[in-house]
Image (cartoon, rainbow, N blue to C red):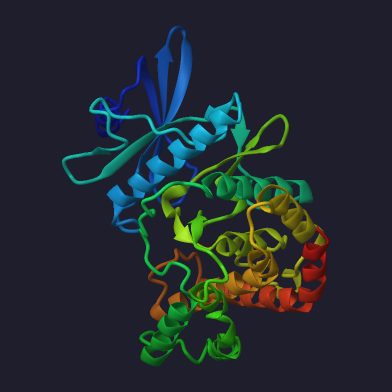
Length: 365
């Protein structure tokens, strides 16, 4: 066991003897370790994480948000008579000082969660049932937080889904062209420019008071849901670092972007990148079954549009990073970010072709 991990683990209020500390491969941002304790003759596991200080510079605020959100969900589930609460919401283990995280001498922030046993993660949606269960989990997450009392959660990553600002960043990257890649991305830049009018639609609607601010996960993909290994139920939403104020449409839009096509996010054969209506129908059905009662008519009316917007926004982000020299997203091959951009833009074209059909389905629910 690493001496550092052993020392950090000792700072948390866990009973039992630490007998193993293994690297945990789940997740791509935070440094994670799976700890095993011997307690009363049985093994009990916990997930220890060091929060990435580059991606999340405001780590104390991130942890304050997580503490408030998880405590509120647990309280709501308790009031509903739910028995397996520890499997349906993440639980922060306090330090011996009663804090929700430990800050080491080097300034790193650490947190500890009980490991939720009997669950697994899907890296990509393969069936309609998986899409429906994932969307139900995110819908329930939003619903349970709809009445979270003030103060407002911290905006730990300002302008995270400010699509007009993403376009401004793209334009600056194209003008600077620091890596001489603008010519290679000419077609994609022109595609983005033709869709610029979509960028401000949701923000403008919010500013007019038509769409309310709510609490949003901001990374609503299937790999951030724990599924019960036996029943297949979507139990618990994870990776709460990006939870902050926003529009629920951002989460639904990201679900459409990431869960309605079988193609990989970096698929190079663009003929494979097509919306699969059965996946969208399962997604919309699951989400509205649990979130429908708190959504406003304006929010319901923009669900399909949100899928288009977030797909466009993600394509713009990949394109910007390609032009900047791949400084944000990790790449495995030359042109990787441009391939990712092309996949997003191809999916957007498919969403546009199916837009009327998708809207009719939502209206029928």
